[in-house]
Length: 118
Image 1 (tube, rainbow, N blue to C red):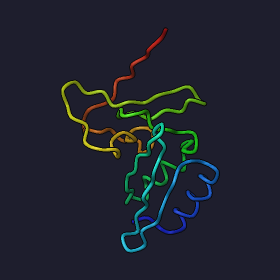
Image 2 (image 1 turned 60 degrees about the horizontal axis):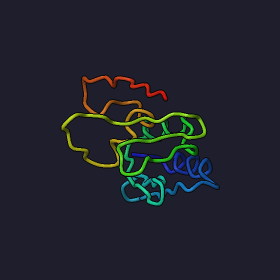
Image 3 (image 1 turned 120 degrees about the vertical axis):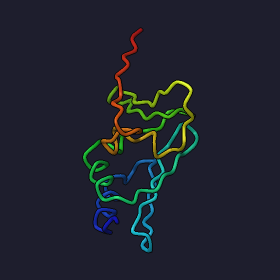
């Protein structure tokens, strides 16, 4: 359950960005939509700790990366992506798992950093 006060704090943080949020009072949940190029990606947040993680990061500088299971902050110079050989991707909530929610997609597996250089 997410208190309305946390929604209000989050709403204040994203003023002037392309990020959209809506509060579902009946479910005490937040629907968040983050830009992904010309498209948008939406997920539902139902846990107060997820909102705390969003408030702790630079949410207003994050964008989703095209059709990939990835988020990026071009201003800060980083990309985070889910890479699993042969495994299907099951939705937008998983793409934000580490940076936004400080959790791994599959319990017991730690993400391995991949550094790309040109």
